[in-house]
Image (cartoon, rainbow, N blue to C red; front, side, top):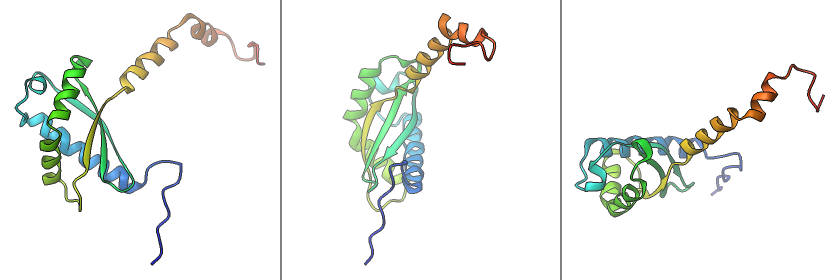
Amino acid sequence: MARRAAPTASGPSQRQLRVGELVRHALAEVLARGDIQDTALSGGLITVPEVRMTPDLRLATCYVMPLGGRDEKPVLAALERNRKFLRQEVARRINLKFAPDLRFRRDETFDEAARIEKLMKSEKVQADLQRPAGTGPDD
């Protein structure tokens, strides 16, 4: 029996991306419905911007962020405490051979976007943007 080639270093396979989206939607639905009886999770909305799957689809790394970025550590701790329940709910909503293990991480894309925005507003970048083309030190 021929083995399938492993995904290239260029990124995740289409299947990983598709299953990650299914898990993301299922997890977001469970969190939005408020089915979990945990005070750290009942206080506000939690966004799930991305879920990354391992190639064997057995581990899902879920990137989450509470609305406004408040109470991140208690929310992540509550998600870890309720991981088994969340895994069961995700498994009920999507049809996979194995229910993926869920791992929760803080989503840092908002921080990165804020850092880039701050850089774009810095005096040095603004000076470069104001300089006419062809008059820079590299030209």
